[in-house]
Length: 400
Image 1 (cartoon, rainbow, N blue to C red):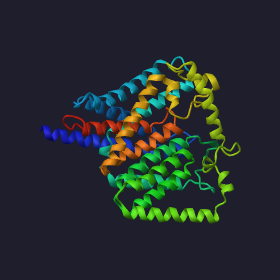
Image 2: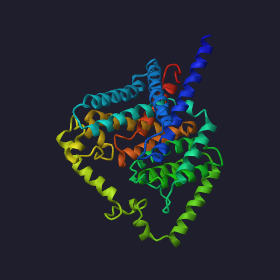
Image 3: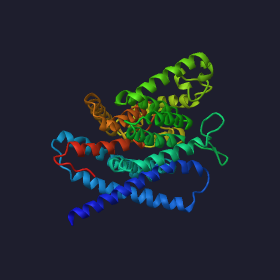
Image 4: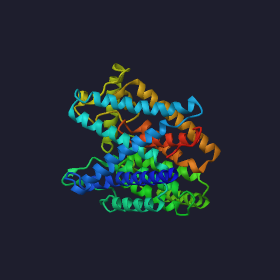
């Protein structure tokens, strides 16, 4: 009876985790499809039931499972405790300051914190999600084809929706990158891996986020070095050699320099790269605020300075500015732990754990160079790391 009950519970949470992942992955296409318009009632119900309630149930159940685990060493338990302490600490700051900061900052940060919970839960249950390989493949193709069907004449996503400029492309690219990395890992021994990698690079290019395009491309190329897939390695080598040769013969570098998606490789061009110029300006202005409030930060200070909730630093320093020195140092420590863990996985050639390596590299590049505290994929990585700790460092395996 007890064993039957456990099987039923496991099946239920496998379904709930898959359902949550599907809803998250179709959220970006839905936001794009209805940008500037009212969402249909069925989608609002899907968000309430499939995302909000489902995400909270998975988070609560997962947290109980985590703290019922017994770890062999304090050193193994420490990162797990640190992750939860950071999550609670940031949540307290956000909700305690809700009545003090502007409504724009409050709405943004409460949404961001909820995304932390959702992506953290997805990371905790990623082993269950990976069991549904065929469903994930179908989901990947549906999402990829949707984005490709909405490109403009420049082969970039058309960001003019309902007469308004769509500014959600960072979300579109981050969500797709999560799906692309999972699919690449699933196909690591397949001859079709190269096709999925090339398609993912093409799609991420169309989504207008230069950082996501560069980071995902780099991680997928590095994955080619890691995997024991000779067909993929040889095909990729000759493909890259061919691209470099054709680029040398036919590509006008001056033209590339003035294209938004490639200007990043040529330095900041004021005429083309206004976004990079703006980020550089925000970096300099917000660094002064960090110096003046180095211990506890200045929560929502970007609104006081610029009148915009989104005028934060676009890298890991945004945690320091928003939440203070302790969360910043905690996140740096976790990145160091994850980096060392990934290094050991690579050295030991543990292919079944390469997904952690892929996400660690992708997330670390993002946080160090271009992503702010609003970046939810970081919390997916932390949830996934806790799952790996439970599997490998607990006295008895106590995964989900």
